[in-house]
Length: 577
Image (cartoon, helix red, strand yellow):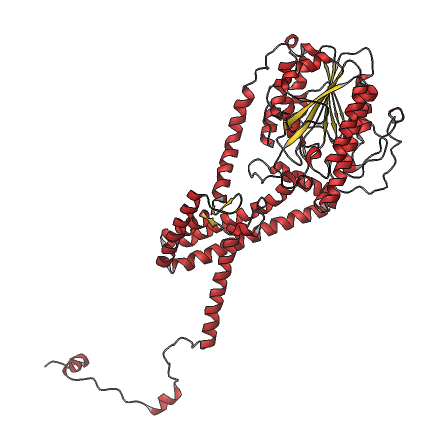
């Protein structure tokens, strides 16, 4: 006999529902199925509108980062461009697999944010050095900027400015990266539509690139600023190897002393470098009348004393600052356009002009009033002057003037008293830097009687307060140019007065500028030329440079030749060999 189970009975007939206990139904709460919360229509519309506003804002940020006019072309019309970087970046975001899209967009956005930071730094470099910042070679200039801040605001103020700049840079990179992410993901949701738009914009870019279309002169509609900057970056990375080859090519490295500078035997050769003495001093209508007046009158006075002068132009490797690069180019015969080249030169055995004089029997002297600390190696070893007078060595007892500087006249009086007046002695080759014409170009020292200079205590504290050099960036350009003209007239007038007072038959004096002043003086010009003049009583010396084509007098004309500053060493050695 088989026992019937519940499952057998279930299979034989429908299972009857269990009776419901009314008491149980009232004591146990029923569980309702979960449903999403109902969002009011107004809130939904607000979220959609807010999302669109955020996306549009992100797009504006990305476009501003791509199209923002740079310091070299600050006009708003520069916005009318098609940046190839934006087209390529968005195309890459749309092309990669979805799982990589977010990271690619973030990476490209961060790179774009760094570009924005770089362009902000460019603004400062254009205002002072008239060129963009080189992220490979220019870090020393940033440290110099911090030093200037410390002098003008103190260490705490400088630290605060640097900290604020770092925070601002991080914020900019973050905002641009997040904006690029928003734009990229939004475009990916409409991938087909954006791919079609990119195709049309890419074709337009190619047409503009081929035709050279421009809305603003010098600013192509087919923009590729980022790509070009990467090309410059690659060239900077290769620059070290290029310069090492140039250093190795030195035709004078092994020339013996008896074969060097024979046409100058017995002469005292003085090279005077006048701070910020640029071509603008002779060309600008607000400056030239003052400066050329001093030079023209000075040439007449020197002619009356038996001196003759020849003048031309050199192109400096720097503008507005970095004087040491100009000195190195002049004395080494190589183009020293950045700090890495300068350091490589200091570690090399390339013959410097001062070394050629030493090898030929001259006693070499340097007067560097702008060096306020111990002159660092390898510079001291490379230049290897027999005597060096820095700020502290000059034993100046008077008041300081513009840029906290010692008056040029006092520096030249030290040259005469310590190097040229003693007898008997070997012929002297001296390099003298004059910095009374350094920004901010006020206050300017008075020109004293040479016999009354002594230890400089006769220089009274100027009535006008000394200002930091960066004040020129805040002043009215007309006042800046007037101050510059006044300072330049003092420095050049001092050199002329020195020759007139102490010059003799054995003096050969070369004076030149190190670089053009800052763009606050020069304006929009990209010219880097500086005047150079050679003054002597010896007609035989002038005959040696007749083929240079330099013009007579102290004011080189528009027709005067223009050489690279790095050409001077070899031309000078060849002329007087």
